[in-house]
Amino acid sequence: MLIVVAYDISVKDQKGAKRLARVAKICSRYGQRVQNSVFECLIDQLTFVKLKTELTKVIVEKTDSLRFYNLGDHYKNKVTHIGTKEVLDLTDALIF
Amino acid sequence: MLIVVAYDISVKDQKGAKRLARVAKICSRYGQRVQNSVFECLIDQLTFVKLKTELTKVIVEKTDSLRFYNLGDHYKNKVTHIGTKEVLDLTDALIF
Image 1 (cartoon, rainbow over the protein chains, first blue to last red):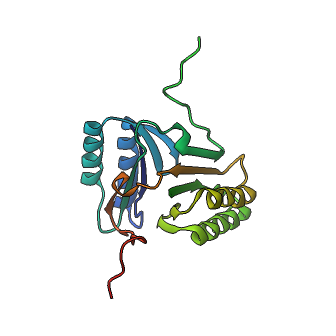
Image 2 (image 1 turned 90 degrees about the vertical axis):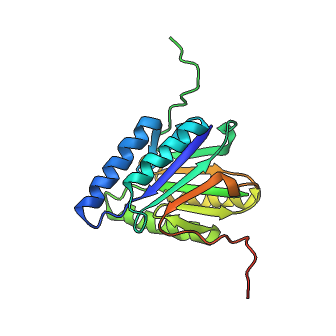
Image 3 (image 1 turned 120 degrees about the vertical axis):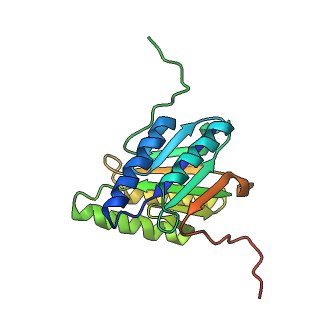
């Protein structure tokens, strides 16, 4: 299933900048960055729980925000992109 | 249906900062801001086309990115929020 992760990390202090980098690093292990603070992850339910748990341990809930959007297995016509950084479709056949 | 709008606007120059403000202003006429550059819009198909058209006229496709995620009509259990700025559910009954 496709999970979209969007995050806002308060970077008012240096700790915030570290949290921002750690959140991005964690997300990059699970999926593909599509915008500065938006990742798309093709993962199953169990992996989704692991991702949420890892991210929740890093953020400060009082100042930071995580939003997850579950687009399910049939997501291709649910995502529209306009502009720069078109995203590689990881499920497309690789032609050699 | 719930449409999530996520955008990355290049603010390398003053024009970019203006575009960023205009994109946010347009989105706020269609929905609710949930993060710095993420809005959630409860709109129908026709309005969605109008929103995309308006935003596409403002951005510079070479440097800016717009992503739309269509979560359909049954979206409540598809959205998970952790952290600050819990979002008002506009469809919930208002209790006076």
